[in-house]
Image (tube, rainbow, N blue to C red; front, side):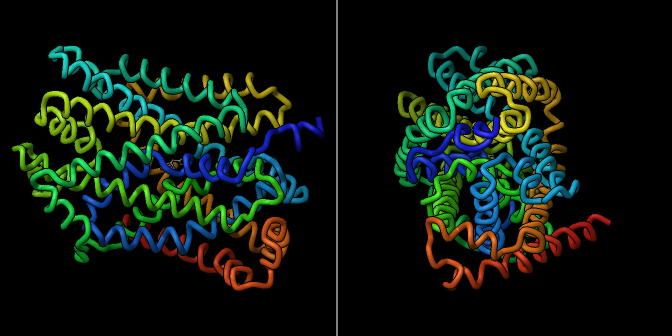
Length: 453
Ligand code: PHE
């Protein structure tokens, strides 16, 4: 039993394997779907700049914190806070909060992931001239169809998670991540040379500072936590499989930069694509004159653009795009499921395969509810993503900074990064965890609460 809690839990086979798996968790619908939407909504590069600041000032330090807690304890988030919390009953609550947020995020994420998979079929049947069938796959409000695709997506996730840390997650992400980057680059290379693309690029890269307000900063902060998979213990869990010779600050930097790069690149695809669509006569503004975003952008404007390109090229681009989204989503759902799975393995002594099936089906039950009631998605996003994750991140920082203590975390990082306690990282990072991150998160919370009242 004790052994299962430590060495038998699984390990990443290589450094690259870990970085790809963690980047796979980070890169998801958050990058390719939500980020370009936020950019379109929030004044182009104005959002980009605030987002970058959130990622570097808050996201990166929290990621290092999560990975150190994970590697030190070699446990799931609940077990990790239990073991570092020295019997204090409050601390495991931080882990349970993460578990709850992760599980609830997975319930809706899985439905949106199912939509993206459905659109692969939509594109194929459109090409074949089967318009009724194609419309079926495009119908986001069709509960039975949503349920079917959620179930399909969850099955894929369960199979990979059941395969284990290196044999399942690491192996799968090692092929999926390069495929994802390849598809993204091919699509950018095509879209960027189409008529109209220039206007999209201009909108993307020019900041409209009049759009900056507290709401935008809260969105950027929520987006940073969501996109970097922080605040709910996914990276505590992935960190718990890290070997002791790995350099934690460096690995976290690779993951943060890959996530930013993919989001930035996705902007180079989506923003130009919108204006290529406009050039083809497709409406891309709502009646108020704002760019269409959210589900309307990815699931209406872009398919309409692929269709109007017509023929083979429309088919290829459409299928590639929705495959890209599906792959990005799958590498993230794996990590979302891994958190509750590692919890029941560690804390309740359940075997991995059983744990993966049980937790997967448990989450799927909720996903089925969301499939029939898609208006729940917005509510879940607000509670568990926009508030839940930054709140979790704040509690992780306060716990590490004032209870476990940054000296001990740095001591943990010495393995794999000798001398870290004494160098400039070792001097700066503790200040971020103790002051900068919690204070910034608190300011964002308070001002947005005020805005609500
Ligand atoms: N980071 C993922 C994305 O951007 C979502 C996610 C959040 C995954 C939290 C794991 C944990 O889509």
